[in-house]
Image (cartoon, rainbow, N blue to C red; front, top):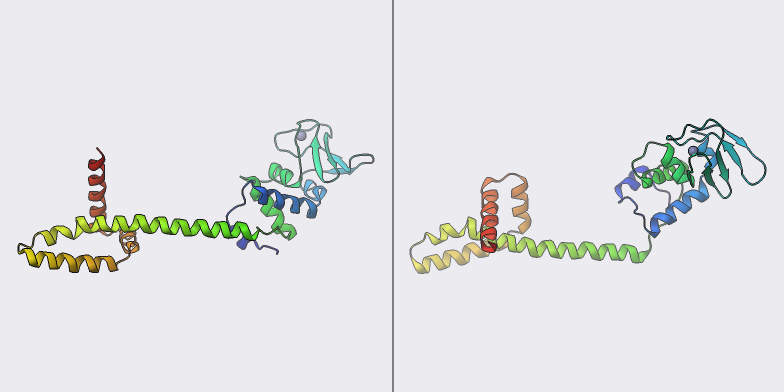
Length: 212
Ligand SMILES: [Zn+2]
């Protein structure tokens, strides 16, 4: 699976979990570190243990003599500033990134690296988490909806003097109110519906007073 920049950015950024480490390993295997290093410094091939050497490209180090070395299997070490790591660390250190995962994704996109997929179990766990949140929002939403009804609709019904008429009106109103999803209330708030916002404020004040 080769990810396009858009499809990568649509997904949540990788965390520092096992999945993230696996992604970094895939980059390390696919992207030649000397190629990335050459964007930032001049490299000379070297015999012996190291592949290449050059002046340190890390921005905080002004390297007068070459102290930067690249060793197999694709790691760098600077004997001047102590900087070390793999190709992702190098791109992160030298490029313009806020987070390590941004450098990882940039290299994945540039080199068309297939990033390892998350396991089935990970996706199932994510799905479960979404479902739990949906349930939670529904419960909270229904409770909120009930309270808004109390503040917004009930005063008008209470104003009906005839007892029987009042009971019937309450039953009808509550039945109709329940048909409205709590999402309707949320939408009304988002659209700046004044009466709903006032009702919410009142619900809030009442809750605060009840706890006081
Ligand atoms: Zn250095």
